[in-house]
Length: 538
Image 1 (cartoon, rainbow, N blue to C red):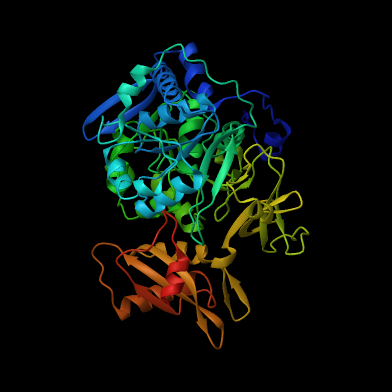
Image 2: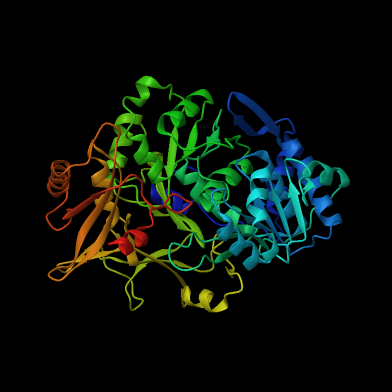
Protein backbone atom coordinates (compact mmCIF):
# COMPACT_ATOMS: atom_id res chain seq x y z
CA UNK A 1 0.00 0.00 0.00
CA UNK A 2 1.02 3.57 -0.64
CA UNK A 3 0.72 5.72 2.47
CA UNK A 4 -0.09 9.46 2.44
CA UNK A 5 2.80 11.89 2.56
CA UNK A 6 3.02 15.68 2.33
CA UNK A 7 4.98 15.63 -0.93
CA UNK A 8 6.19 13.40 -3.75
CA UNK A 9 9.62 12.72 -2.25
CA UNK A 10 7.94 11.52 0.93
CA UNK A 11 5.70 9.17 -1.06
CA UNK A 12 8.69 7.62 -2.81
CA UNK A 13 10.80 7.34 0.35
CA UNK A 14 8.02 5.61 2.26
CA UNK A 15 7.19 2.96 -0.34
CA UNK A 16 8.49 -0.53 -1.05
CA UNK A 17 6.86 -3.45 -2.87
CA UNK A 18 5.65 -6.37 -0.77
CA UNK A 19 4.33 -8.93 -3.24
CA UNK A 20 3.83 -12.35 -1.61
CA UNK A 21 4.93 -15.47 -3.45
CA UNK A 22 1.43 -16.98 -3.20
CA UNK A 23 -1.55 -14.82 -4.05
CA UNK A 24 -4.99 -15.22 -5.64
CA UNK A 25 -7.14 -12.29 -6.78
CA UNK A 26 -10.43 -14.12 -6.15
CA UNK A 27 -9.53 -14.96 -2.58
CA UNK A 28 -8.37 -11.39 -2.04
CA UNK A 29 -11.47 -9.53 -3.30
CA UNK A 30 -14.06 -11.98 -1.90
CA UNK A 31 -12.85 -14.26 0.88
CA UNK A 32 -10.68 -11.88 2.86
CA UNK A 33 -13.49 -9.44 3.60
CA UNK A 34 -16.06 -12.24 3.94
CA UNK A 35 -14.03 -13.62 6.83
CA UNK A 36 -13.42 -10.22 8.41
CA UNK A 37 -16.80 -8.51 7.87
CA UNK A 38 -19.23 -10.83 6.05
CA UNK A 39 -22.15 -8.39 6.02
CA UNK A 40 -20.11 -5.60 4.48
CA UNK A 41 -21.64 -4.39 1.19
CA UNK A 42 -19.42 -5.09 -1.82
CA UNK A 43 -21.65 -4.23 -4.80
CA UNK A 44 -24.64 -1.90 -4.93
CA UNK A 45 -26.51 -2.55 -8.17
CA UNK A 46 -28.78 0.15 -9.59
CA UNK A 47 -31.37 -0.84 -12.21
CA UNK A 48 -33.82 1.99 -12.80
CA UNK A 49 -35.31 2.81 -9.41
CA UNK A 50 -34.42 -0.58 -7.92
CA UNK A 51 -31.30 -0.90 -5.79
CA UNK A 52 -29.93 -4.28 -4.64
CA UNK A 53 -26.89 -5.07 -2.53
CA UNK A 54 -24.40 -7.93 -2.56
CA UNK A 55 -22.20 -8.51 0.45
CA UNK A 56 -18.68 -9.91 0.52
CA UNK A 57 -20.09 -13.07 2.06
CA UNK A 58 -22.44 -13.35 -0.94
CA UNK A 59 -19.53 -12.91 -3.34
CA UNK A 60 -17.53 -15.64 -1.62
CA UNK A 61 -20.39 -18.16 -1.52
CA UNK A 62 -21.44 -17.53 -5.13
CA UNK A 63 -17.93 -17.54 -6.56
CA UNK A 64 -17.09 -20.75 -4.67
CA UNK A 65 -20.18 -22.48 -6.02
CA UNK A 66 -19.60 -21.26 -9.56
CA UNK A 67 -15.95 -22.34 -9.44
CA UNK A 68 -17.01 -25.79 -8.20
CA UNK A 69 -19.70 -26.02 -10.89
CA UNK A 70 -17.27 -25.07 -13.64
CA UNK A 71 -14.74 -27.59 -12.37
CA UNK A 72 -17.44 -30.25 -12.37
CA UNK A 73 -18.07 -29.49 -16.05
CA UNK A 74 -14.42 -30.02 -16.94
CA UNK A 75 -12.91 -26.54 -16.67
CA UNK A 76 -9.33 -26.83 -15.43
CA UNK A 77 -6.49 -24.46 -14.42
CA UNK A 78 -5.20 -22.50 -17.38
CA UNK A 79 -8.49 -22.62 -19.30
CA UNK A 80 -9.80 -19.29 -20.53
CA UNK A 81 -13.23 -18.26 -19.25
CA UNK A 82 -14.98 -15.46 -21.14
CA UNK A 83 -17.02 -12.97 -19.10
CA UNK A 84 -19.54 -11.07 -21.24
CA UNK A 85 -21.76 -9.26 -18.76
CA UNK A 86 -22.79 -5.68 -17.94
CA UNK A 87 -21.70 -4.06 -14.68
CA UNK A 88 -23.11 -6.28 -11.90
CA UNK A 89 -22.17 -8.50 -8.99
CA UNK A 90 -22.21 -11.37 -11.51
CA UNK A 91 -19.08 -9.93 -13.16
CA UNK A 92 -17.12 -10.12 -9.91
CA UNK A 93 -18.52 -13.60 -9.17
CA UNK A 94 -17.45 -14.89 -12.60
CA UNK A 95 -13.98 -13.32 -12.37
CA UNK A 96 -13.42 -14.62 -8.86
CA UNK A 97 -14.55 -18.11 -9.80
CA UNK A 98 -12.04 -18.14 -12.66
CA UNK A 99 -9.23 -16.93 -10.40
CA UNK A 100 -10.05 -19.45 -7.68
CA UNK A 101 -9.98 -22.24 -10.26
CA UNK A 102 -6.58 -21.15 -11.49
CA UNK A 103 -8.19 -20.39 -14.85
CA UNK A 104 -7.76 -17.19 -16.87
CA UNK A 105 -10.56 -14.62 -16.91
CA UNK A 106 -11.25 -13.13 -20.34
CA UNK A 107 -13.34 -9.93 -19.91
CA UNK A 108 -15.42 -8.98 -22.97
CA UNK A 109 -17.10 -5.60 -23.45
CA UNK A 110 -20.84 -5.39 -23.92
CA UNK A 111 -20.38 -3.03 -26.88
CA UNK A 112 -18.53 -5.72 -28.85
CA UNK A 113 -20.30 -6.90 -31.97
CA UNK A 114 -20.19 -10.50 -33.28
CA UNK A 115 -16.93 -10.04 -35.22
CA UNK A 116 -15.05 -8.65 -32.20
CA UNK A 117 -16.37 -11.43 -29.99
CA UNK A 118 -15.54 -14.11 -32.54
CA UNK A 119 -11.97 -12.94 -32.84
CA UNK A 120 -11.29 -12.74 -29.11
CA UNK A 121 -13.02 -15.97 -28.11
CA UNK A 122 -11.37 -17.89 -30.95
CA UNK A 123 -7.92 -16.34 -30.50
CA UNK A 124 -8.00 -17.07 -26.77
CA UNK A 125 -9.38 -20.58 -27.30
CA UNK A 126 -11.97 -19.87 -24.60
CA UNK A 127 -13.27 -23.05 -22.97
CA UNK A 128 -16.25 -21.46 -21.18
CA UNK A 129 -18.30 -18.28 -21.39
CA UNK A 130 -20.43 -16.63 -18.71
CA UNK A 131 -22.96 -14.25 -20.24
CA UNK A 132 -26.59 -13.11 -20.24
CA UNK A 133 -29.44 -13.25 -22.76
CA UNK A 134 -28.01 -10.29 -24.69
CA UNK A 135 -24.64 -11.98 -24.98
CA UNK A 136 -26.27 -15.22 -26.13
CA UNK A 137 -27.97 -13.37 -28.97
CA UNK A 138 -24.58 -12.16 -30.21
CA UNK A 139 -23.05 -15.60 -29.71
CA UNK A 140 -25.67 -17.31 -31.90
CA UNK A 141 -24.25 -15.83 -35.11
CA UNK A 142 -20.67 -16.98 -34.39
CA UNK A 143 -21.17 -20.20 -32.41
CA UNK A 144 -20.07 -22.46 -35.28
CA UNK A 145 -16.71 -20.64 -35.41
CA UNK A 146 -15.84 -21.44 -31.78
CA UNK A 147 -15.03 -25.18 -31.56
CA UNK A 148 -13.08 -24.76 -28.31
CA UNK A 149 -16.08 -23.31 -26.47
CA UNK A 150 -17.48 -26.30 -24.54
CA UNK A 151 -19.63 -24.58 -21.95
CA UNK A 152 -21.90 -21.53 -22.09
CA UNK A 153 -23.39 -20.27 -18.82
CA UNK A 154 -26.26 -17.79 -18.79
CA UNK A 155 -27.18 -15.59 -15.84
CA UNK A 156 -30.71 -15.22 -17.28
CA UNK A 157 -31.46 -18.94 -17.11
CA UNK A 158 -31.23 -21.95 -19.40
CA UNK A 159 -31.61 -20.63 -22.94
CA UNK A 160 -30.78 -22.82 -25.92
CA UNK A 161 -27.51 -24.63 -25.28
CA UNK A 162 -26.66 -22.40 -22.31
CA UNK A 163 -26.68 -23.79 -18.78
CA UNK A 164 -28.46 -21.63 -16.20
CA UNK A 165 -25.90 -20.03 -13.90
CA UNK A 166 -28.06 -20.71 -10.84
CA UNK A 167 -28.33 -24.39 -11.79
CA UNK A 168 -24.57 -24.69 -12.32
CA UNK A 169 -23.91 -23.05 -8.98
CA UNK A 170 -26.33 -25.51 -7.36
CA UNK A 171 -24.13 -28.31 -8.68
CA UNK A 172 -21.20 -26.81 -6.79
CA UNK A 173 -20.32 -26.76 -3.13
CA UNK A 174 -19.70 -24.14 -0.46
CA UNK A 175 -16.67 -26.19 0.55
CA UNK A 176 -14.67 -25.23 -2.56
CA UNK A 177 -10.98 -24.61 -1.86
CA UNK A 178 -9.32 -22.06 -4.10
CA UNK A 179 -6.20 -23.08 -5.97
CA UNK A 180 -3.03 -21.97 -4.19
CA UNK A 181 -1.74 -19.83 -7.04
CA UNK A 182 1.56 -18.04 -7.28
CA UNK A 183 1.45 -14.27 -7.66
CA UNK A 184 3.17 -14.79 -11.04
CA UNK A 185 0.62 -17.34 -12.34
CA UNK A 186 -1.61 -16.20 -15.26
CA UNK A 187 -4.98 -14.83 -14.13
CA UNK A 188 -6.41 -12.28 -16.54
CA UNK A 189 -6.24 -11.52 -20.25
CA UNK A 190 -7.46 -8.19 -21.61
CA UNK A 191 -7.37 -7.55 -25.33
CA UNK A 192 -5.92 -4.24 -26.45
CA UNK A 193 -8.48 -1.94 -28.02
CA UNK A 194 -7.05 -2.47 -31.50
CA UNK A 195 -7.13 1.08 -32.92
CA UNK A 196 -4.45 -0.19 -35.31
CA UNK A 197 -4.30 -3.81 -36.47
CA UNK A 198 -5.88 -6.78 -34.75
CA UNK A 199 -6.31 -6.68 -31.00
CA UNK A 200 -3.76 -8.62 -28.96
CA UNK A 201 -4.43 -10.47 -25.73
CA UNK A 202 -2.34 -8.96 -22.93
CA UNK A 203 -1.89 -11.75 -20.38
CA UNK A 204 -1.53 -10.68 -16.74
CA UNK A 205 -0.58 -12.49 -13.56
CA UNK A 206 -2.45 -12.44 -10.23
CA UNK A 207 0.04 -9.83 -9.01
CA UNK A 208 -1.48 -7.28 -11.40
CA UNK A 209 -4.05 -6.24 -8.79
CA UNK A 210 -1.44 -5.67 -6.07
CA UNK A 211 0.65 -3.77 -8.61
CA UNK A 212 -2.26 -1.38 -9.21
CA UNK A 213 -2.72 -0.42 -5.57
CA UNK A 214 -0.09 2.36 -5.32
CA UNK A 215 -1.42 4.12 -8.42
CA UNK A 216 -5.01 3.52 -7.37
CA UNK A 217 -4.37 5.05 -3.95
CA UNK A 218 -2.61 8.03 -5.51
CA UNK A 219 -5.20 8.87 -8.18
CA UNK A 220 -8.13 8.37 -5.76
CA UNK A 221 -6.63 10.36 -2.85
CA UNK A 222 -5.72 7.49 -0.55
CA UNK A 223 -8.84 5.41 0.05
CA UNK A 224 -10.45 3.95 2.02
CA UNK A 225 -12.03 6.85 3.89
CA UNK A 226 -15.23 6.82 5.91
CA UNK A 227 -18.28 6.41 3.70
CA UNK A 228 -16.33 5.81 0.49
CA UNK A 229 -18.32 4.51 -2.47
CA UNK A 230 -16.87 4.04 -5.95
CA UNK A 231 -18.52 4.43 -9.37
CA UNK A 232 -17.28 4.40 -12.94
CA UNK A 233 -19.23 4.44 -16.20
CA UNK A 234 -16.40 2.44 -17.81
CA UNK A 235 -17.20 -1.14 -18.73
CA UNK A 236 -15.69 -3.53 -16.18
CA UNK A 237 -14.27 -5.48 -19.11
CA UNK A 238 -11.56 -2.85 -19.55
CA UNK A 239 -8.43 -2.11 -17.56
CA UNK A 240 -9.90 1.26 -16.60
CA UNK A 241 -13.17 -0.06 -15.20
CA UNK A 242 -11.75 -3.27 -13.77
CA UNK A 243 -8.31 -2.28 -12.45
CA UNK A 244 -8.60 1.50 -11.96
CA UNK A 245 -11.88 1.22 -10.07
CA UNK A 246 -13.62 -2.09 -9.29
CA UNK A 247 -11.11 -4.69 -8.11
CA UNK A 248 -8.88 -2.31 -6.08
CA UNK A 249 -11.99 -0.90 -4.38
CA UNK A 250 -13.09 -4.39 -3.36
CA UNK A 251 -9.57 -5.15 -2.14
CA UNK A 252 -9.93 -2.15 0.19
CA UNK A 253 -13.49 -3.07 1.23
CA UNK A 254 -14.99 -0.06 -0.58
CA UNK A 255 -18.49 -0.66 -2.04
CA UNK A 256 -18.76 -0.32 -5.82
CA UNK A 257 -21.89 0.99 -7.53
CA UNK A 258 -22.89 -0.99 -10.62
CA UNK A 259 -25.28 0.29 -13.30
CA UNK A 260 -25.87 -2.55 -15.80
CA UNK A 261 -27.72 -0.48 -18.38
CA UNK A 262 -26.02 2.88 -17.88
CA UNK A 263 -25.45 4.92 -21.04
CA UNK A 264 -23.37 7.96 -20.29
CA UNK A 265 -25.51 11.06 -20.26
CA UNK A 266 -23.95 14.00 -18.39
CA UNK A 267 -26.99 14.96 -16.32
CA UNK A 268 -27.88 11.33 -15.56
CA UNK A 269 -24.30 10.79 -14.36
CA UNK A 270 -24.48 13.73 -11.99
CA UNK A 271 -27.90 12.59 -10.75
CA UNK A 272 -26.50 9.12 -10.03
CA UNK A 273 -23.53 10.58 -8.16
CA UNK A 274 -25.91 12.64 -6.04
CA UNK A 275 -28.51 9.93 -5.36
CA UNK A 276 -26.04 7.13 -4.56
CA UNK A 277 -23.73 9.37 -2.48
CA UNK A 278 -20.74 8.55 -4.65
CA UNK A 279 -17.50 9.73 -3.06
CA UNK A 280 -14.94 8.57 -5.61
CA UNK A 281 -15.41 8.26 -9.35
CA UNK A 282 -13.28 7.15 -12.26
CA UNK A 283 -14.35 9.11 -15.36
CA UNK A 284 -12.55 8.92 -18.71
CA UNK A 285 -11.59 12.28 -20.28
CA UNK A 286 -14.38 11.99 -22.87
CA UNK A 287 -16.96 11.74 -20.07
CA UNK A 288 -15.49 14.77 -18.31
CA UNK A 289 -15.59 16.79 -21.51
CA UNK A 290 -19.25 15.85 -21.92
CA UNK A 291 -19.93 17.01 -18.35
CA UNK A 292 -18.67 20.46 -19.32
CA UNK A 293 -21.94 20.97 -21.15
CA UNK A 294 -23.95 20.86 -17.90
CA UNK A 295 -24.65 24.32 -16.54
CA UNK A 296 -24.13 24.94 -12.81
CA UNK A 297 -23.53 21.28 -11.83
CA UNK A 298 -23.02 21.97 -8.11
CA UNK A 299 -26.06 24.21 -7.97
CA UNK A 300 -28.36 21.68 -9.59
CA UNK A 301 -26.99 18.43 -8.10
CA UNK A 302 -25.90 17.56 -4.57
CA UNK A 303 -22.24 16.72 -5.16
CA UNK A 304 -21.20 17.47 -1.58
CA UNK A 305 -20.06 13.90 -0.91
CA UNK A 306 -18.01 13.60 -4.09
CA UNK A 307 -14.46 14.06 -2.81
CA UNK A 308 -12.39 12.75 -5.72
CA UNK A 309 -12.52 12.19 -9.47
CA UNK A 310 -9.76 10.30 -11.25
CA UNK A 311 -9.31 10.08 -15.00
CA UNK A 312 -7.18 8.14 -17.47
CA UNK A 313 -7.23 6.76 -21.00
CA UNK A 314 -6.32 9.95 -22.88
CA UNK A 315 -4.79 13.28 -21.99
CA UNK A 316 -7.23 15.38 -19.98
CA UNK A 317 -5.90 18.77 -21.03
CA UNK A 318 -5.49 21.99 -19.04
CA UNK A 319 -8.90 23.44 -19.95
CA UNK A 320 -10.85 20.45 -18.66
CA UNK A 321 -8.57 20.35 -15.61
CA UNK A 322 -9.38 24.02 -14.88
CA UNK A 323 -13.11 23.51 -15.58
CA UNK A 324 -13.31 20.74 -12.95
CA UNK A 325 -11.61 22.94 -10.38
CA UNK A 326 -13.96 25.83 -11.15
CA UNK A 327 -17.29 24.04 -11.63
CA UNK A 328 -16.91 20.89 -9.51
CA UNK A 329 -14.52 22.19 -6.88
CA UNK A 330 -12.23 19.21 -7.51
CA UNK A 331 -8.73 18.77 -8.87
CA UNK A 332 -8.76 15.72 -11.13
CA UNK A 333 -6.34 12.93 -10.24
CA UNK A 334 -5.10 12.11 -13.72
CA UNK A 335 -3.25 8.87 -14.47
CA UNK A 336 -1.58 7.04 -17.34
CA UNK A 337 -1.00 3.45 -18.34
CA UNK A 338 -1.63 0.88 -21.04
CA UNK A 339 -3.43 -2.44 -21.10
CA UNK A 340 0.02 -4.05 -21.03
CA UNK A 341 1.31 -2.01 -18.08
CA UNK A 342 -1.31 0.15 -16.42
CA UNK A 343 -1.30 2.94 -13.83
CA UNK A 344 2.37 3.85 -13.79
CA UNK A 345 1.90 7.64 -13.81
CA UNK A 346 -0.58 9.46 -11.59
CA UNK A 347 -1.44 12.73 -9.89
CA UNK A 348 -2.75 13.39 -6.38
CA UNK A 349 -3.67 16.94 -5.34
CA UNK A 350 -3.53 16.24 -1.59
CA UNK A 351 0.09 15.10 -1.92
CA UNK A 352 0.99 18.14 -3.99
CA UNK A 353 1.30 16.05 -7.16
CA UNK A 354 -0.97 17.74 -9.69
CA UNK A 355 -0.36 20.15 -12.53
CA UNK A 356 -2.65 21.35 -15.31
CA UNK A 357 -1.77 19.68 -18.61
CA UNK A 358 0.23 16.91 -16.92
CA UNK A 359 -0.67 13.29 -16.30
CA UNK A 360 1.33 13.36 -13.07
CA UNK A 361 4.59 11.74 -12.02
CA UNK A 362 5.81 8.15 -11.85
CA UNK A 363 3.87 6.22 -9.23
CA UNK A 364 6.21 5.05 -6.45
CA UNK A 365 7.41 1.54 -7.27
CA UNK A 366 7.44 2.11 -11.05
CA UNK A 367 10.45 3.26 -13.05
CA UNK A 368 9.23 5.38 -15.98
CA UNK A 369 11.44 7.22 -18.46
CA UNK A 370 11.08 9.37 -21.59
CA UNK A 371 13.41 7.88 -24.21
CA UNK A 372 14.82 9.07 -27.50
CA UNK A 373 14.78 6.80 -30.55
CA UNK A 374 18.36 5.69 -29.74
CA UNK A 375 17.32 4.54 -26.26
CA UNK A 376 18.91 7.39 -24.34
CA UNK A 377 16.89 9.44 -21.89
CA UNK A 378 15.37 12.63 -23.30
CA UNK A 379 16.29 16.03 -21.89
CA UNK A 380 13.86 18.23 -19.97
CA UNK A 381 10.90 19.20 -22.20
CA UNK A 382 12.26 17.11 -25.08
CA UNK A 383 9.54 14.83 -26.54
CA UNK A 384 10.27 11.13 -26.44
CA UNK A 385 8.63 7.75 -25.96
CA UNK A 386 7.21 6.73 -22.59
CA UNK A 387 8.95 3.55 -21.40
CA UNK A 388 8.56 1.42 -18.27
CA UNK A 389 11.35 -0.68 -16.79
CA UNK A 390 10.89 -4.37 -16.01
CA UNK A 391 10.33 -6.19 -13.77
CA UNK A 392 7.14 -4.46 -12.64
CA UNK A 393 4.09 -6.03 -10.90
CA UNK A 394 1.61 -4.41 -13.31
CA UNK A 395 3.51 -5.43 -16.43
CA UNK A 396 1.95 -8.10 -18.62
CA UNK A 397 3.41 -11.56 -19.01
CA UNK A 398 3.22 -11.28 -22.79
CA UNK A 399 0.84 -11.24 -25.73
CA UNK A 400 -1.22 -14.41 -26.05
CA UNK A 401 0.42 -16.71 -28.61
CA UNK A 402 2.42 -13.81 -30.07
CA UNK A 403 6.02 -14.12 -28.84
CA UNK A 404 7.38 -11.96 -31.67
CA UNK A 405 4.98 -9.12 -30.87
CA UNK A 406 5.93 -9.45 -27.20
CA UNK A 407 9.62 -9.19 -28.06
CA UNK A 408 9.02 -6.09 -30.19
CA UNK A 409 7.32 -4.40 -27.25
CA UNK A 410 10.67 -4.28 -25.41
CA UNK A 411 14.05 -2.69 -25.92
CA UNK A 412 16.30 -4.34 -23.39
CA UNK A 413 14.56 -3.98 -20.05
CA UNK A 414 12.35 -1.13 -21.22
CA UNK A 415 8.76 -1.76 -22.27
CA UNK A 416 8.00 0.71 -25.05
CA UNK A 417 4.53 2.23 -25.03
CA UNK A 418 4.43 3.92 -28.43
CA UNK A 419 3.17 7.05 -26.63
CA UNK A 420 5.01 10.35 -26.85
CA UNK A 421 5.43 12.68 -23.88
CA UNK A 422 7.82 15.18 -22.36
CA UNK A 423 9.02 15.58 -18.78
CA UNK A 424 9.26 19.09 -17.35
CA UNK A 425 11.93 20.38 -15.00
CA UNK A 426 9.91 19.34 -11.94
CA UNK A 427 9.46 15.75 -13.10
CA UNK A 428 5.85 16.04 -14.34
CA UNK A 429 5.07 14.06 -17.47
CA UNK A 430 3.05 15.81 -20.17
CA UNK A 431 1.36 13.45 -22.61
CA UNK A 432 1.72 14.47 -26.27
CA UNK A 433 0.01 11.61 -28.10
CA UNK A 434 0.33 8.26 -29.79
CA UNK A 435 3.29 8.25 -32.15
CA UNK A 436 0.98 7.58 -35.10
CA UNK A 437 -1.37 10.42 -34.01
CA UNK A 438 1.28 13.16 -33.97
CA UNK A 439 0.89 15.89 -36.57
CA UNK A 440 3.92 17.22 -38.48
CA UNK A 441 3.24 20.73 -39.76
CA UNK A 442 5.93 23.13 -41.08
CA UNK A 443 8.58 21.27 -39.04
CA UNK A 444 6.47 21.42 -35.87
CA UNK A 445 5.50 18.19 -34.08
CA UNK A 446 1.99 18.73 -32.72
CA UNK A 447 0.07 16.50 -30.32
CA UNK A 448 -3.70 16.33 -30.92
CA UNK A 449 -4.72 16.24 -27.26
CA UNK A 450 -3.94 19.89 -26.50
CA UNK A 451 -5.85 21.06 -29.57
CA UNK A 452 -8.86 18.88 -28.73
CA UNK A 453 -8.95 20.13 -25.16
CA UNK A 454 -8.86 23.73 -26.37
CA UNK A 455 -11.62 23.04 -28.91
CA UNK A 456 -13.83 21.60 -26.17
CA UNK A 457 -13.42 24.80 -24.18
CA UNK A 458 -15.41 26.65 -26.84
CA UNK A 459 -19.05 26.95 -25.71
CA UNK A 460 -20.36 25.44 -28.97
CA UNK A 461 -18.17 22.30 -28.95
CA UNK A 462 -19.20 19.08 -27.25
CA UNK A 463 -16.49 16.76 -28.61
CA UNK A 464 -13.56 17.21 -30.97
CA UNK A 465 -10.78 15.31 -32.67
CA UNK A 466 -7.66 16.71 -34.36
CA UNK A 467 -5.70 14.96 -37.10
CA UNK A 468 -3.01 15.77 -39.61
CA UNK A 469 -4.20 16.16 -43.22
CA UNK A 470 -1.54 15.85 -45.96
CA UNK A 471 -0.48 19.22 -47.35
CA UNK A 472 2.12 19.86 -50.09
CA UNK A 473 3.47 23.01 -48.43
CA UNK A 474 3.43 22.17 -44.71
CA UNK A 475 3.61 18.34 -44.87
CA UNK A 476 0.38 18.30 -42.86
CA UNK A 477 -2.18 20.79 -41.66
CA UNK A 478 -4.32 20.44 -38.57
CA UNK A 479 -7.88 19.39 -39.35
CA UNK A 480 -10.52 19.25 -36.63
CA UNK A 481 -13.70 17.20 -36.51
CA UNK A 482 -16.25 18.79 -34.22
CA UNK A 483 -19.51 17.62 -32.61
CA UNK A 484 -21.62 20.62 -31.58
CA UNK A 485 -23.57 21.09 -28.39
CA UNK A 486 -27.34 21.24 -28.51
CA UNK A 487 -28.57 24.63 -29.65
CA UNK A 488 -25.69 25.32 -32.08
CA UNK A 489 -25.81 24.90 -35.86
CA UNK A 490 -22.89 24.22 -38.18
CA UNK A 491 -21.87 27.16 -40.37
CA UNK A 492 -18.81 28.71 -41.96
CA UNK A 493 -19.09 31.59 -39.51
CA UNK A 494 -19.01 29.24 -36.51
CA UNK A 495 -16.06 27.35 -37.99
CA UNK A 496 -14.17 30.64 -38.32
CA UNK A 497 -15.03 31.59 -34.76
CA UNK A 498 -13.75 28.25 -33.45
CA UNK A 499 -10.53 28.56 -35.48
CA UNK A 500 -9.89 32.04 -34.08
CA UNK A 501 -10.62 30.77 -30.57
CA UNK A 502 -7.94 28.07 -30.82
CA UNK A 503 -5.43 30.31 -32.58
CA UNK A 504 -5.74 32.90 -29.83
CA UNK A 505 -5.48 30.41 -26.98
CA UNK A 506 -2.77 28.13 -28.40
CA UNK A 507 -0.64 29.29 -31.32
CA UNK A 508 -0.71 30.04 -35.03
CA UNK A 509 0.81 26.67 -35.98
CA UNK A 510 -1.63 24.63 -33.85
CA UNK A 511 -5.00 26.02 -34.83
CA UNK A 512 -7.12 23.84 -37.19
CA UNK A 513 -6.96 25.19 -40.73
CA UNK A 514 -9.96 23.01 -41.60
CA UNK A 515 -13.00 22.17 -39.50
CA UNK A 516 -15.57 19.50 -40.33
CA UNK A 517 -18.80 19.24 -38.34
CA UNK A 518 -20.09 15.76 -37.51
CA UNK A 519 -22.95 14.21 -35.60
CA UNK A 520 -20.57 11.82 -33.80
CA UNK A 521 -16.94 10.69 -33.70
CA UNK A 522 -15.63 7.13 -34.16
CA UNK A 523 -14.56 5.70 -30.81
CA UNK A 524 -13.20 2.49 -29.39
CA UNK A 525 -15.30 0.67 -26.82
CA UNK A 526 -13.07 2.26 -24.16
CA UNK A 527 -14.15 5.75 -25.24
CA UNK A 528 -11.00 6.75 -27.10
CA UNK A 529 -11.30 8.59 -30.40
CA UNK A 530 -10.15 6.51 -33.38
CA UNK A 531 -8.17 9.20 -35.17
CA UNK A 532 -6.88 6.67 -37.71
CA UNK A 533 -10.40 6.30 -39.09
CA UNK A 534 -10.72 10.06 -39.41
CA UNK A 535 -7.37 10.23 -41.22
CA UNK A 536 -8.57 7.55 -43.63
CA UNK A 537 -11.67 9.63 -44.34
CA UNK A 538 -9.48 12.61 -45.20
